[in-house]
Length: 423
Image (cartoon, rainbow, N blue to C red; front, side, top):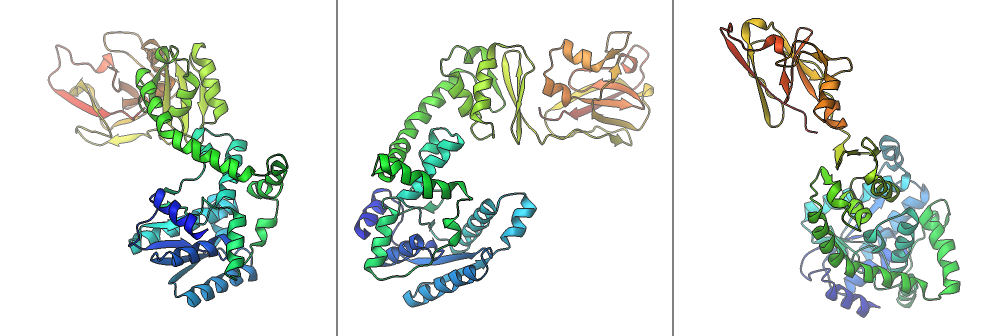
């Protein structure tokens, strides 16, 4: 097994032989085997152990076991205690997610402090098979089905070439003990159900199911670069950018659903939502989908993406005669200074707002004006206006109010410039 791992490390260029490797060690069979094999292969290593304080005496037992193991083998060790339950409550996450976040955040902190090359973790073929099934059940694209990489984002997985059975046999052979996390035997976590129930049932159909699923991940992993290259070419053809996608171009492409999915892959939308978006390309404007962090609007011949954290502009007071600017590209308007009164304010438009558009005599609701100029729903929601007292004197970026215009009797002109909120 050691020779298989050595070749796997070399083939996948996981480690260089000179620079320090951090090794996550829980005390379980997998991480113990990883630690000892890397030591036998003469890599410079340092162990990291997390005590999540979730299992009382069992957690302390694990910490002592890892400490004794490292002392016996002359391996440097850092241990960190976490208030995992408190972190989960504060962040409204599961205990499993809280533990994962705490573990990897600390790992990366130590990585930066030590200038190590990477963090080795003990995922093996069985874990890879479980990951494929887990992602398949949850719904995922090709990247999720490719599973875990040998090396990615400084996380190294040199045991992906061996099975859990290989690891146990290795530890028996060298007469090395390990500890067992009792929570791994409970079926309250989905991954545990897959490990304890689903894979054994699949093994009745295919005794080599772990190898089959793991090998499938490897094949998909190798295919992803070709897939991504073609996707990028297709996205260029449909005139996509970070915030908009051209529907007329998209409708000419037979892979519309896939392209929408790829465009939005890191924005939190589900595969069901992206399928609905593709089906709605020919429908009327106004349909909208939401993820936790984004909204997507179908507006005429475009799909428009907007972050949810754009805040409404609260009334802001300008106390004196100044040019005022907020965030991005400037918009400028000119007014008759003697018609204005201070303070001047600006804010996001509200229901019922109206003004007298430049060149007109009658008032007009700003909502109607924005509809006439074919503003999108997002643009309407984020439209800024400038006020003098209670009068709106300028729909920023579009039109000023006729009552405050520069005319033949104007003696002094004031220029106002402001930047609209990003849409």
